[in-house]
Amino acid sequence: MSERIDTLRTLLQSNHRETFEQLQDLGEPELSVEVYQAEDGPWTAKDILGHLVDAEQGLYLQLGRLAKGDDPLPADFDVDRWNRRAVPRRRQLSYPELLTELESARRKILTLLNSTDESALDQTGRRPDMGELSLEALFRWVAGHRSHHVGDLLKALGRET
Image (cartoon, rainbow, N blue to C red; front, side, top):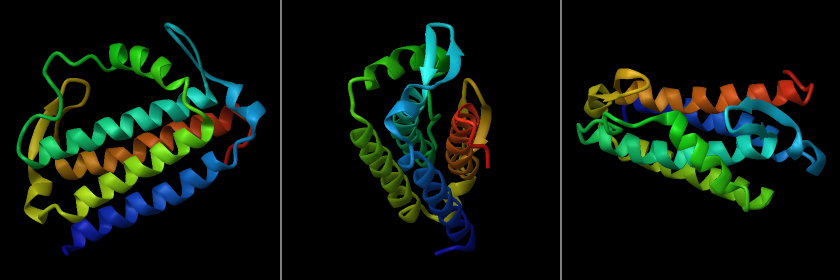
């Protein structure tokens, strides 16, 4: 394994441990606390968890496409439109189901990383919302995306760290 792959693995594993621990620590009343006011209504703490599940499952696919040298998303992809549809679809899942799916999605991302050749980390592709980026940058973005939302969730709960 390469040092770059090892660094990314460490980042993704430590990010998962830290954020997953915080997400596992939510009580039932906290799941309904509003975190964001979106165009289509509020996103609660549970909605944030559903969003993270959907995002990491989608990011796994995007990482795989980028590793093959393809653009991660179609040129006409609209992330806001996607989220408006995806978040409500996750609302019927229970809190334990969402946690299980989030853990599974991160495992798949780590498995993909472990099977990635270091030279593929320099592959670039375009995301409509992010422009041109490398596979390495997208792996790093996975961790940052989760940290960002978990930080906002903790802030809404008055538990900033």
